[in-house]
Length: 583
Image (tube, rainbow, N blue to C red; front, top):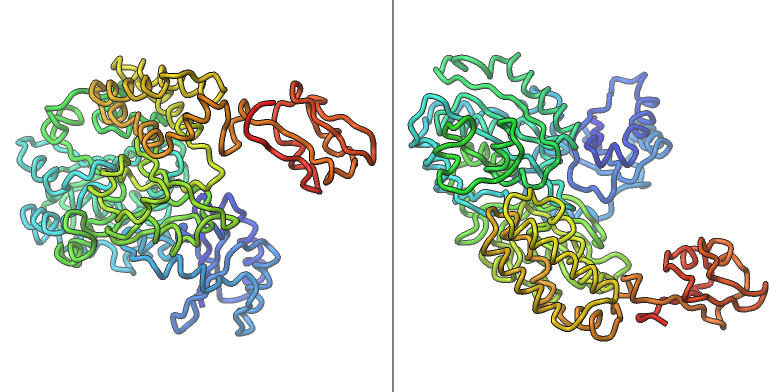
């Protein structure tokens, strides 16, 4: 009998330590112990415990606390599988509908034990790659059709071949783990839950291009990922799988970790390289490409976490097996982080070609409170908003690009009917303008001017011509910016104007927010028939905008009301209403 506790960042934040205490109190005098594993992707139900019996049968329990964990452990020791906190069939469909390669070890393998990883076939692909040699490795990667999972979808084999062809005795393999998209947490979960899978992929890349050093550039905001990566590297050294002449193969390789300071622009490969070199993270023009002149001006191959996490599976199972999944031009699987107004948020790995609609509704259970879906933001702040009537779009690089969005690293933010799309565009533009490195004028000034216009619009001060100005600025930035951040920064604005122009017009011409979210364009009123005169709302109002007599309907002074929402949260009778427009 095994007790697997989800101990990734999401599990710990949800109370996994209390669950651990409860389990240990019951198991301390038995032969059983709790195994800490990474997040299995079911973030919506953390903390999670998986029970695997002696026959290999698995039962999942979620939303646990210390007491329910004790009840669970006591029941299991009696030979029972308690019904409380057990996952429903609908919730299990979240897992059963996926095809897992990158995430296959997350929630199963102990991320702090190399022996756990090896017991599941870990480093078999590395041993095989040592025998295959550089050319055959790259042939398999080419046959797989693997494209970079960091956003642009550049063919992985082409990068590797370019770095291999560059003549130098000093080459580097760099893992881009600078995951900065709001709502994205794929890389973090993989590094926390199965770090050896990423390291093995990097080591195979090292054989392929002739590199002796791997560098993981990871966000300092991921302390647990950094800790487990360092433990994994230390274990590799102890097993003599790093260093000189590994397994008597003549292959030398080692790792180092570099923590970034959280600059979004450092996800761009040339800015990342500048940061690695101790300089300010600012992009440079290409060519030369990193494969010719990268870290320390030496040939460098850069891929992201998910790309490297696919490599060992491809070498072990063959490129053709990987290519059987997905579409003609987008092979294999893709990991997505589902966030926002979706019922079951978490990590989803599915074959390329599946529709957005299937992920949101069939796998993730639809929208919270069964509200109507309005849009899905794909590609983070560099992506775009895909409207409800286009959610049947298949997920592949070309189809997503046609909508105006991008695949990106895999973030999906689901928005319901109560979302203001103008405010959403403002949110992403605020992010990109602050994250601009400032090197080029189109991005530094253009994003700031676009943000100013959007702020005026949501404040009810928009004017005729603002939409045209936004589009002109957007096109100037896209064509004139130096790097991918600037080139794609206007995407959220362009897609919201394209698909939700009526909301912009309502804000500008009618001074109304149809979604009733922009505080400058809404008003609060009290329904006299529903108000009981309890005075709770008046006592909670921070600006003394509500007045009245006890047991008689109260009223709101619109001039004093700051639309903070305290009154709505307080009222037990649903008497306070939000109206679009200012009174």
